[in-house]
Image 1 (tube, rainbow, N blue to C red):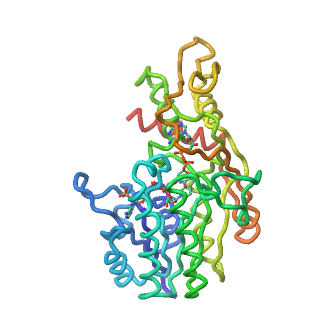
Image 2: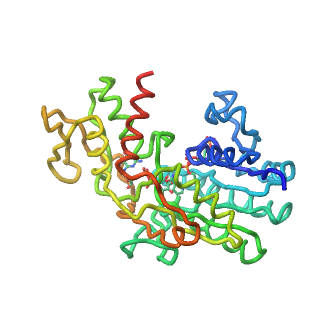
Image 3: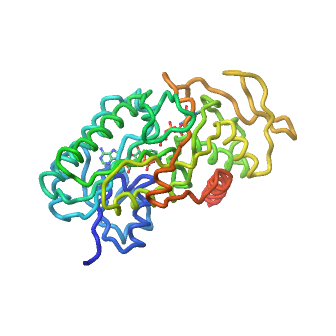
Length: 340
Ligand code: NAP
Ligand code: F7E
């Protein structure tokens, strides 16, 4: 058999670029579906992928473009990583979020069924579907209780994917991935927002305090490079299935701030509570962090922590990067980027 062909949606995003790196290493032919933008030719895809990935113009909201991609490239595997993925934004753009994150998935599944039903399909499901959790650790059997328009749309897409698997025998799998981060993370997610600010502080490029919303949220943060391996492994199984992917360790936003400042040698002293909570440089008393309620969400997911025992057993998947290493990696990368 020759090299496999994979289509990736969301190739310009964090996970899309990591997955492309992995599949290229495995000698896949990689096709990335990219949305047209008016201001930034030739591409928002990461520079190192330009010569290696075939870019195909398309949009999840345009079923013709998805059908054209499947017709033209006859993929062995199709990874749907495209989404309006920002939870906070999903309250501000709920229709667009639902359209992309749910109807977009329908457009792909419909096209696979019609044009190439033996394509193996990966759907990017999310720990946000657990939302208001009741279990200490969440696994594939935990109750779903979505808490944002994003999570509602993702849960609908999750069930739609399962429904296509069961109705039409499509090899479709959902990865229920917990938060995963890294230097390629978008700058409006909390981890990258923190590491970028810390790097700027270290380089003397800002003297303003870092403004954040809910410091108490607990997340199971892993490294994106580790998580795309799990996506690929899911599509290599004989049978399609759904898997929870996470580290099993949870930290608060406040912990993340502490670790990021520790990476540049600063320890934080916290004072006050709620909206009045502030973080000061323990050595010189300078105000470094404060709460701005504008970053609060209408409904919050307080705690997420993965039980990935099924993936560990069946996929032999293990995360390699620890929380501490992840934070240092992100601060180092931002220091480098901001120094240029
Ligand atoms: P991301 O960095 O926000 O990337 C999202 C990608 O989707 C971008 O390439 C974006 O393209 C593309 N996109 C958005 N709307 C589109 C449309 N209508 N048609 C085609 N492409 C469109 O997200 P990520 O962190 O890599 O996450 C990848 C996937 O996993 C997403 O589905 C996300 O919801 C899900 N997920 C992420 C996490 C996490 O912690 N990262 C955890 C669980 C699940 P543009 O560049 O054109 O905007
Ligand atoms: O927020 C709190 C915020 O936006 C994490 C997406 O990839 O992972 C991501 O969703 C926590 C929340 O990620 C700020 O309220 C405090 O409790 O980095 P985030 P998320 O909402 O967990 C899941 C698994 C996905 O599927 C999503 O696609 O941090 N928080 N202050 C803040 N969050 C942001 N963004 N900005 C703040 O200033």
